[in-house]
Image (cartoon, rainbow, N blue to C red; front, side, top):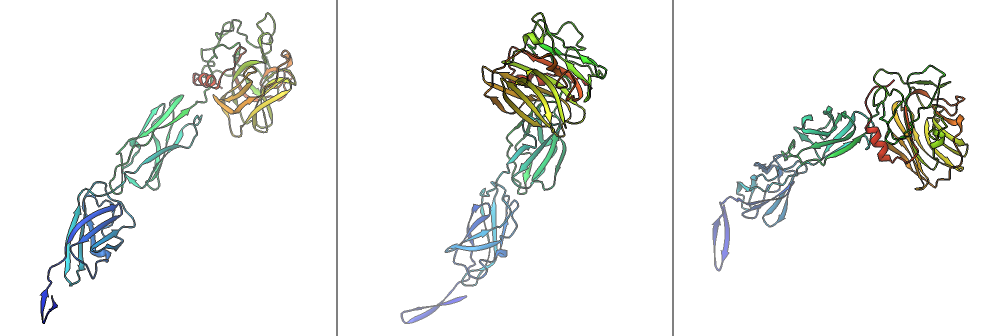
Length: 451
């Protein structure tokens, strides 16, 4: 093409037949690339279809950008609305169809070597259950920041007492769900390593932070509690029978004088005594010789631990344990309207915490501890503290009443009986077991089946 050029008293034509070229390609972000030309551009320079991306860093970007706009002078910016580059790869931009001001059409490309910007997808592991939990199997969720490919159940590593990954599923390749059944008491850990899968651009994932959940089994039998003073380890009884207490005379947690059946309590297939919610009660009152429960019990400090399996529900009024001097000095684990009360009343100052029990059945451990010197009491269910610590305790007055020292009812007249199986009870009159103590005793339990 010829262009006129005028000078002093003359004119001539200058010919421009040189096609423009791409002189520089610069990746700005994971979705923007700047292209610089050798000269000013004209028609087609902002037409997105005239630009094509290629190279090892292309990743999930579409071949053509969504838009092209002038930045300054001969520099233009290609923008993609979606997609992602493969981090560290090469980005090549080829431009065709656009023309310079003289109408010469371009067919040129440039490369930003290693300039592609991509993001490794992180993953977070969560658990539906809170720690600690008695639920099994545990339900886990692995959530990536974006859609990934190649992630499989074998990429998840259970640890601690975590069982094999099961029920692995996803609907969108972003959120994955899976289960794990713990093999026993303790920490269930889950790990996902780095590079086990990639996003759609090929960027490998980063490692997840390890998740740890404490599993507390619902054991069928509790080991003899260290330091227990009064221990009740019954065998099967007929309906309506009053069970005598068993007293550990040595008060050292070592039980002698009767058959324990095994060191952990009831052996599989052995029947625990069943309370029919009508007329069954375990009378644990003893006195005499300085070793009976009435002799050694201290309302100012102590702990109780029971193992009980409710047969159907906790509806109505049911009393699992009653230790009482009188109405103003008593400790109780009892239900009312499907709510379990861990109740301590000393000198008429009543304190209690509650746990909803709707739908909760099966074998569980129950604990109540009190310490007037520390001015604290606490309820424990399956080794886990129930609500906040009770404070502001009163002063216990009086000795235990023979009619109100029972398991499975409120009194020896068999009112407010529970419905279920009674397995084990321990009382410590020398110390208030901590929540950690209860959890340790619970975790140390044997898995022998009672029922």
